[in-house]
Length: 183
Image (cartoon, rainbow, N blue to C red; front, side, top):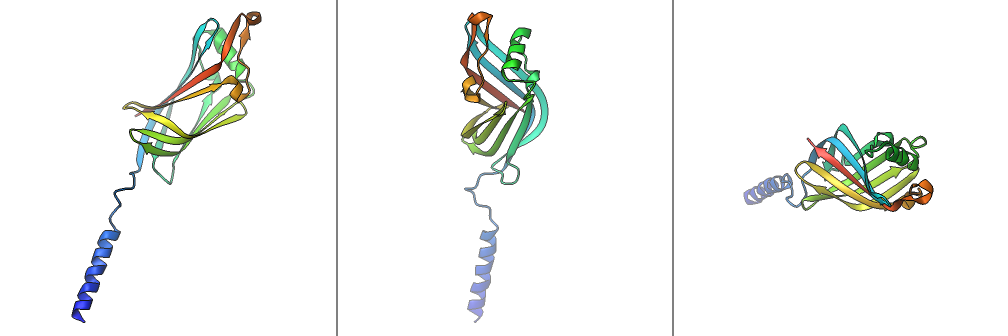
């Protein structure tokens, strides 16, 4: 009877000891504090390359491998983009219908570590269209997390600008780079 009782106590002690241990195969939750976002839209036209950007300060936290708050949302004021030239900036704002759709939204969810980088679901809402990307890669460096979208104006049912009776044409392909700067 004494031996059974000792085995039972030892078994319970081992169970509680092992039961309270955290498994080593589960990834750690990580919080990344963001203090600034920069978005660049680049593309080509018949007169050369263009680059429009929007940088704004924001305080938020991106949680990685977290089941509680694993979403990062931000609104982007389309009227704050600057192309380095008033005419080009006005053309961009006209193309994305800034008066009707003043904001775009980026939503990043289900953020998981993928080696040095991250994988996530990305929803990009621009004009009245939502582009959805599953297993989108966010590249991680010491100062920022960044991603790149390669798309076409036609993907979001917009027409690339044409000026001067067709002498200046913007190509349909555009690249959207976004950077989330860390604290």
